[in-house]
Length: 290
Picture 1 (cartoon, rainbow, N blue to C red):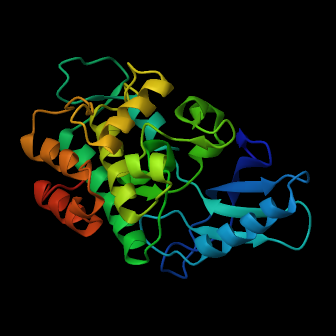
Picture 2 (cartoon, rainbow, N blue to C red):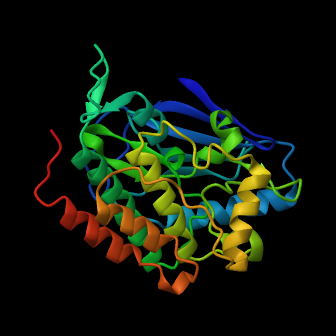
């Protein structure tokens, strides 16, 4: 074990090193690699254990270049645990915060820069991973930069560790006083109707894209308290034309228009991840990370 990533009421996640694990779609192993190990606490209820088994079965079936893989499972002996991929540079939110925009005009010694094309390159990978989940009708429910990992050459993999990380506790609001929800990333129909679909993931993707383009310097709707964020979503629910959108992060009209399409009130009018991925690829044609 290298370090504790997070600790929740019924589970703890550690970062560790492991040997002998094959690369994606290959029988080759590349020596030691980072993994995340989630242990289910002994105090977990029967329902939480059933949920753990269900989630692990679902995640173990996923195989995509931009999805963090399940590498191993222990369900016979206590404590129950699952071993997941973890990448060299950690989560995308913290990675972006440690960089500045290449076009910012501010160059600080020792601070690395990211170009606009690189940001689109990472965004397109997230869209690609979500396109795969969309093809399976799998709904993520918590897409955000905190739930994306960064590897070498800006390789992105979608995961689901953010909920358990105390760094991001403030990103979740207990709407019913019990269940923490990432309301600043959520579509109005998920908050007010409890309806989660691939189209509500599309809404969250646009917020994630906004995070990326602002290099996570701001939290979505950082000028509003959680009750005010709920009130803002209620405007979309009521369709009273008073909904306040996130400020435009870039001057690129096409990108801003894409985000607005993802935030359309009628979920069926939002683009698919296949369309989003194709759009971002075309916008970034010819780019290769260096």
